[in-house]
Image (cartoon, rainbow, N blue to C red; front, top):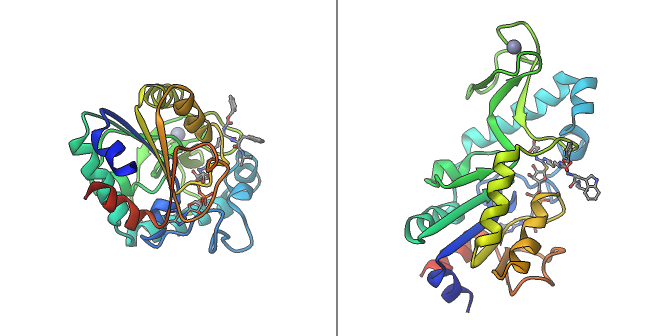
Length: 234
Ligand code: BV8
Ligand code: ZN
């Protein structure tokens, strides 16, 4: 069933969340290991938290950058890179900021929430790639002297409009949507599955547990992404 749908898809869209990177050793946000010190992501990934304590927020990001720098893409990431090369129209939409999809080889990719390896100046808006681990100075500053922030979408901030527009378009026109490793509680990303479904796509969920989407989807594959995704390709 699901493997046939995926293999015969002309327009395949994939939405991923933190669960796909779990097998690379990156903790998910809402699962075990989701706390850093005593904080939840919702406490730190906000403009208010950054305004209050930029050093604390940057220490969290510096820690996460260190984890990701030591991690490798896993079998789930590699399966999605392979899918991109065989499906005629493919779009990977990710909520993740870790860059592991790119390292696995995906290029037709929309990063909804930005990227861990990019900074943006809070005054002049200049964006710069910075892959240094650990950062030599926390919080880092721009050459203009102002504070830098991660080029990441925090709670309460809008997603980049062009990226979001393309994501909606990909979901609306897909004949199959794969939803992988997301708790589907963060919006607007979570709205892509009902959008695809209402537009006629078959929706397949791959997750180790149930989510608010599980009742909506056409097929729920319970298991680890790194095991289930390669099986879809066999
Ligand atoms: C916006 C970057 C408008 C940070 C992140 C009340 C109701 C509804 C909505 C709202 C509300 N109050 C506020 C909102 C809106 C809010 C929102 O959705 N809040 C929720 C939480 C209530 N959204 C926003 O604020 C968004 N912006 O709405 O803007 C606007 C418009 C105009 C002008 C101004 C504003 C912006 C949201 C962006 C937040 N950014 N990320 C960073 O990473 O540093 S959030 C964070 O959650 C993560 O980064 C991730 O991107 C996102 C989603 O999490 P998941 O990826 O799903 O991860 P999670 O841990 O939850 O789940 C893991 C899953 O994997 C689990 O299901 C588990 O079972 C599974 N799993 C585990 N292991 C495996 C596995 N599955 C398979 N294999 C395995 N091995
Ligand atoms: Zn600047």
